[in-house]
Picture 1 (cartoon, helix red, strand yellow):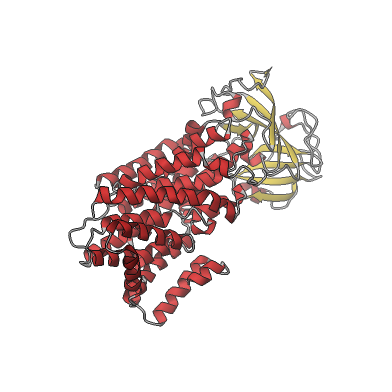
Picture 2 (tube, rainbow, N blue to C red):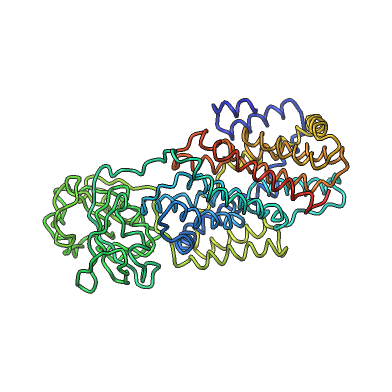
Length: 580
């Protein structure tokens, strides 16, 4: 299995399911034991947390919080100082995988708007989430997996007198490691990648559009300066060239404050136009009153037919009284270029391309293609339901409080939070289903099943003897050995598989040395997540690799010192905090 994973020729989930099937066929463990991972509390808790994170994103809660905490940094160091600690703290309470998934578009938009050259920012996003995830039990999938194995071992009588891991018990070693690691990422790591090539922002390709948006009253943009809102600089992909306020023009300077009702005119590339459309606080100027709510709408790119009733009419005359469409005009392009006239004075011509905000009825009304000859839905863009943002934040905070106080288990709290998101409209059932990362869940469940074969076959005992021999009779050296072996494995295979393999090994070492198992278990938790060296070692590394333009050498250059720093901190503190 290790060899196939390293070769990277097959999907990870397929490798794990295949290995589980072979072990079942060879009867290395009972079927029930091999399949126990799919009923493990830790795996189910990870699954339950995905819809909660999706609810935070779909309501715009995570974006609003990010804008408030991060703002518009002017330098790479300022960006790291504002973003990385925030990510670490948030990842302590929201599983780091969905957390990074939510933050990548936020950071991508920030870099596009500010033009920051921060080589380690995307990498730091992954690393900070891993460090933050080690501050609480619910911060990372591996923590929940190991905690679940501890519960299983307690119930089976292997760990007499040991209590399950509490939600903040890992913080005693996780918080110091995160603080030192963040200082390294902010002040030292950027110097290690001065020549790293970030993925260049998408250059404007295809059509260029003219668009106008209105600032919503009492929105997050109302009262912000153009600089703070990200509209002042020569942003990649779009440019603000005009502001209309109460019928008069206002100069769009960096310190000009936006007010509710302001009309902002932009020129935008095809790639940037959806970004403007999804910006919280902006709504298209021109369109019809739509019966459905905006978070249910989608974008569609169209080309105007020669037979369209709107041909020859000014945009200010639209929509026509007998128009069957419910839609809003997001942008218009002519011959691939921005039209030379003002937005509302522009007359529609056959062949004009437009981007429209529509509901499902649009496709029925346009089924004969009389008005629009080409319709192309733009997938992946949705307006966030910000009226539910406070509610989604409250639900998530209540979930954390319930899990931390012991009122309910973390699984129960996460399931209740997901149900509350659905019942209150923060999340749709389709969004909840799509939020589940099945590949990750299959790998986690299968990895726990492999632990039964590793233990039942005697492999864990053999490896435990080897590690114990390396450690001698010193429990402190044993901690270092466990950390080192776990780090080696987690940078080669998945963290879930590493945790499943090393847990019985650490337990065997604990029995042979006659030491307390808890510090060893905490070492396995932390080390299994700290895959800083290999981009394939942790899912969040792979998620940021493309946007950062990183190679294996970039991860190794930054990750090896960070691994050493975390190792020193946790190996020194674990025996002091948890006892030997």
